[in-house]
Image 1 (spheres, rainbow, N blue to C red):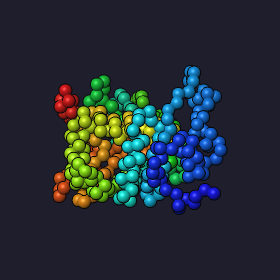
Image 2: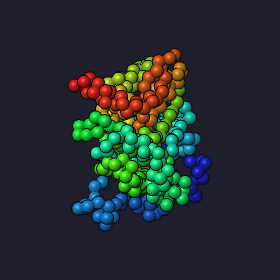
Image 3: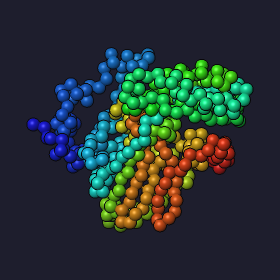
Image 4: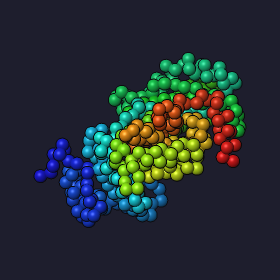
Length: 370
């Protein structure tokens, strides 16, 4: 008989030393897999299924599916599926999760699942007056944007309208309307894009301009998830160094990533090693995750003055606390953290920069990296 859920543990000592058959058998018992589910682990996608997913199919491409072991997340024992071609990623993740167990495991949380649809308005005679008229018509626009009966039946749907002015661009002044849409547990792209299409004629009438793009944004700063872990300093101790010394060096390495965009890119690649692997294993859009998290001047200028590492360390002797702002596997944004010096290291999220300051921040970044 299978073990009851309450007695299962993700702490898998020596799991890497077992054969593939032994690992599969253990996983089948641990997760109560059916025969069809076990077969799918080894067979994967059929060519018939692949041909219905994308265009011009000529075959299937395989990648290894591994298990991230040792995880405790919100007091639950969890085995994490990971698809990745790079050696050592699964091992590193499992080792980190083993360290995290000593501090009670990971704690996670999230905001509401608010996605943003952007509607680009050109040729408005007066963009400020157009923006005022659009905001005054918010009830009308939200009603027109309520285009998903399924999401609405579960309590989701459009929640707000925002206007953003871009008076200086490479071509012409623009008025950008943000439709905020609570997609609940859906990824939300189709629902958000449909809602943006629905309000486009209303926006043209209200603004006197012409609507061009109407599409979701992958910079989902209102749909965030996070994970926190506290690890006792003793877990970092070795023959070469005491735990406190290791913690101090980790903090220095993290500060390097926060301050320097070249290090930040490599730092964030390490984080995305794990995130992308889980996104792939669960059939999610890892490109959208990376698009919202990439340390580019354009993406991060709206959040912080320079690209920064997407995790931050808080040193609390004799423990170390790591706050990693990670995207939801559904969708997906990272938040840049900045350091505020007090008694030791602490971290706090930056408030979003106001739109009128974005251009100056972007130009300052370009000058610095060039």
